[in-house]
Amino acid sequence: MATDGSDPIPPHKTFDTILVLDFGSQYSHLITRRLRELNVYSEMLPCTQKLADLDWTPKGVILSGGPYSVYWDDAPHVDPAVFEIGVPILGICYGLQEIAWHFGKNVLAGEKREYGHAALKVERHGDGEAGGHVDKLFADIEDDAEVWMSHGDKLSHLPEDFITVATTSNAPFAGMAHKTKKYYGIQFHPEVTHTPKGKVVLKNFAVNICQAKTDWTMGKFVDQEIERIRKLVGDKGQVIGAVSGGVDSTVAAKLMKEAIGDRFHAVLVDNGVLRLNEAKQVKETLTAGLGINLTVIDASDRFLGRLKGVTDDPEKKRKIIGNTFIEVFQETAKKIAADAHGSPSAGEIEWLLQGTLYPDVIESISFKGPSATIKTHHNVGGLPKDMNLKLIEPLRELFKDEVRELGMNLGIPEDLVWRHPFPGPGIAIRILGEVTPEQVRIAREADAIFIEEIRAAGLYRQISQAFAALLPVKAVGVMGDKRVHDQVIALRAVETTDFMTADWFPFDGAFLKKVSRRIVNEVNGVCRVVYDITSKPPGTIEME
Ligand code: GLN
Image (cartoon, rainbow, N blue to C red; front, side):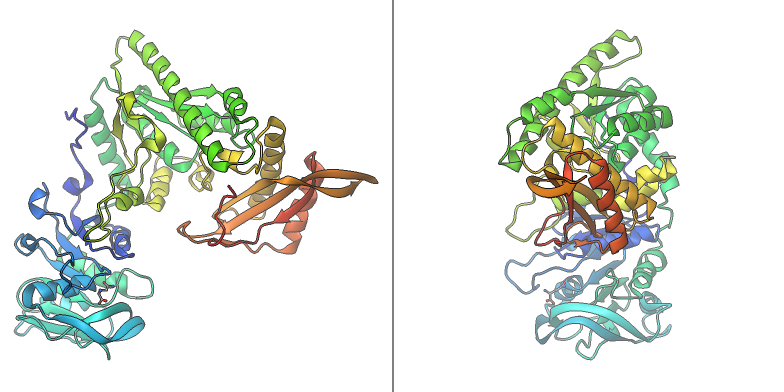
């Protein structure tokens, strides 16, 4: 059993793995995504990775694109050992140029940049001199294929022992392959959706050329992961973790429950700024529904007490909520540990569960440039190091949609699995201005109506995030023949795939009319409803 926090059976030791070495392209992680969609496990590491430092051998290696030019003095280069481990290599864009550079120093700036769609012509060689393997990369792809390019450099000529397997009008070496070794390079990007047959190219490489097994399935991952957690924690170990009712923490918690039962202690801190009835609903779903050992701490008064009078600075709200959360969580952890000590089968609480996802891991390791230092991974949603707990991160290899799939696999209800993201500081940052119990009531009730109507209209899944915010202004209205001076609710609903950019959702007028009517009629203190039609950028998704 590993007690030092090292991972006894990481997925790259159990599944055939394609290693993606990242040269800093904005698409690098998509290569890993696409491979996993093909049920081939893949991991990404920075291009500076020394092969000798890996204690596992990939089935194949992909060199990603990147913003550099291989002939620059400070350009990043792959560890030459990659050409000695005897596995197939595919270079994509910068990766192709890197392979060419390694074998022939034959890359230079082209006269013409090539950006966008290009028509690829595949050249097949049959079983001749090159033994047939060179044609495998473009198997099941027509001779004319549409691809997407983004490059300015080009090969002056092929390196020795390579042959051309594809061309475009601007790139005579759009695809190349080594005559005897399984080394391939392509100038276009197969990982982006603008290359319609890109996934076939990646499949040809991973499955047909590298012979990687297509066994990366959630069912299998669950079994492995449960086994892994048991080994890691041991048969007495105790784990604590905060849950929020969001998909990541719920899935992580359920996985822990499956692995170690009640030795996983989930903590839900009611900070007074959760959504309407949320603490109660989360409690029901997690305990009665999923059988998770959950402690709910109602600390609303403490949070709201500290938020009183904070009117100007949204960052201050975030800090107060973050710090108070840590305080409450630590107190609760101490209590749970004290109780657990009383029980004869219990060990110390030495582990902290964290719902880190692969994009966070990638963000922390991705290659930012020859001079840039590689960021260390940000820690535990602000939990302090002096808690002296070791981290357990069962989702750290997964992308968001894989977490959802895993959630479904673990029997988590569908509407929870597809829940919109909800910020840590809760509706405190959706109440612009001072957060008081009365403002919380108004924001909550309006939000509940908005979300209820979105669900009723069948739009919840189409929308990525939606909420009602309370503006710190008053407007005049006439209600029941009486002049009122009441508050304004702003509705926000956005569509996005990555939350980096987003656009407002185009509701039809009848829908907005209904929601507005209901909010004004049912929520005391509101006399107007407006809809936020700002995209991101320049807006953000949340309002504070
Ligand atoms: N910098 C290289 C070029 O312009 C590679 C670009 C890329 O990988 N997208 O050709």
